[in-house]
Length: 634
Image 1 (cartoon, one colour):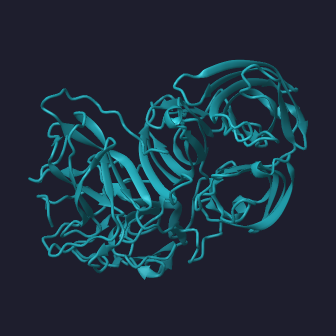
Image 2 (tube, rainbow, N blue to C red):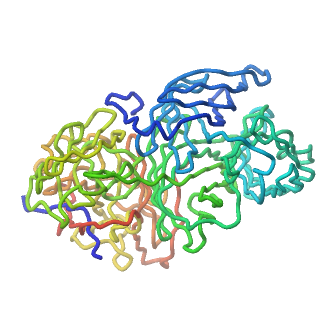
Image 3 (tube, rainbow, N blue to C red):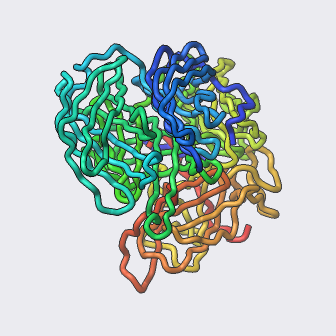
């Protein structure tokens, strides 16, 4: 089957203030009583909340206990009520669950009903997990488990650490030995076997008792909450600010598809030298397919404004969802029902959780609720959209059975009787087909929410809602996968490849989507001007494997519709070979592509990939067409 890329036709010529209505058609995905635990840290305080939350038709009530570090008192009763709004995809927010802050928990509901999320839109760090409550007996907690554990050490004032706990329950109150591998501010792990561990059941939760031990890694009571079948567990201490999440191991399903995720990470790389500990929390999603991961995280680092982080990663095919990512520095473990947990290694204690997304089908003209993605990076739908963004819409009955391509610029807003509305504004269309449409988000899409709808021969689709950001950058790649080598050209128009790498001091053109508004402004769907060129309103920065690279030009590629061009000067001192190419904007950071760097004086070897500090989708696509020659100073 031929792969089609988005039609880039070449001719000569902070979003939590919900302005538009957020889709609440997925409110039924959160319905009934759930166990939950939420841990929140600020620069001067911390809170843990645990208990039950009952969801009913957009309203919730909490009956829980809460512990606050600044009061120094034990846990006390905590009750509150509020509202929530979940879209058809399972993505949404729960308003005002937390006494420290009055902003929502953003997150997603997975196929098994588990909600994972975080408060990201204010300067706190937070993780929230909830699972449907069911009547539990001792036999529900049964079999082998792997657990990711994170201890912020708020109470003790010590060094935060993370750990992998491995145990096996006999289903009748006995656990016995628990093997602990802990990571803090050194690259070496601390290991311990805790003996004599047992549990009881109280109020449909498991009270697990860890005896006092000589290292004090995990001791005292830990409350375990679980899904009804016991395959997924989470919880923490009733008198501390720790968090744990685990999965029953053994036989696991094939790893792949769309996952919803959340995480809490400490960065202690500078702890010994200056006592500095960085930390970040996030919610997001990722696609795993044939050894490739394309992901998005909405990150809050406690200092900066929240930003979108898009990335690519890989995993060994055949390993399932259990592997170690050298890029993220996390050991991932898949559970019996497909959930995945992560344990941060060395000096980055981390807890992560990912749950499989629900399956979606629809009749008539139908946009998949998770089917709006960046044309360049293919980052998942949680990354949102931006003005001028080039996006793909996936679904069914969206257009004709055979591909219909726009033949000229400006791009039309109606193609083969198909129209796409973004907040009721017709969007320029590059191509249409029954299962996908490529469109440019109108530049006037400046509300905090964008609502997409397709009209096919007079029949309207469902409405899919996306958050709108200032920027959602994605780098086009040569193999059209959303990762791999960047679509970059030398000044003579030839591609930058391992056989023809970029050289220090050279300026290359990198082609992107999602860089936001431009000046001078242009009409939607027209070919970008060259005299004067339209430059981005937002300022971007570039680095290559952690080394700052100067940007000579950032704006729309002249003669194209929907294509941005960033001219980057290659810095000196890079290792020859494959280097990560990173672009950041005011509310975004993308690290999904590589660029080949040459150095006649050294051998060509792969360079180490550097993640931002403090922290495929399979489809038919049209081939990317790039200019025959680079315009270095448009």
